[in-house]
Image 1 (spheres, rainbow, N blue to C red):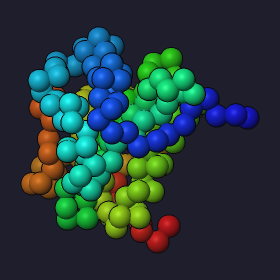
Image 2 (image 1 turned 90 degrees about the vertical axis):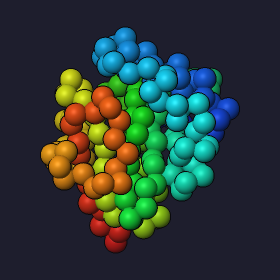
Image 3 (image 1 turned 120 degrees about the vertical axis):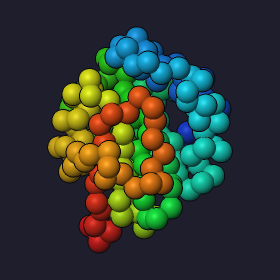
Image 4 (image 1 turned 90 degrees about the horizontal axis):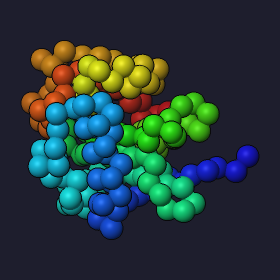
Length: 168
């Protein structure tokens, strides 16, 4: 079966598409009280994600429409942080597997880069996201278990950690 999308690394030429994907999901679909001003990283993907040793991937249709995203922040200490994992509502689910493919690529990159711990923050209303992360081996942790170098977003109130075995 032909894939309806491809995953590729994004750069600043995709900033407008990234904003068009993420902001409506946050603000309209889930009513998260977050604005562009609270996420200036979205205006400069290269400086905030790529240059420090992370990456920003997108799932794109053959027409180059951005339908999903995931970002990796490298924060040192053999630790990565997942940010900006979003898939357009009409493209979600196991059938297409976009979220799974995005996460698998991020984990492969972490292992290749000797990252042994991945953290993420999310919000309590995103129950499907919680199930997805837990299905993929992430463990919910209290905020007090976050390392002091974890870049916390103000809206986040649920946190996860995954330890990687670099040999797998």
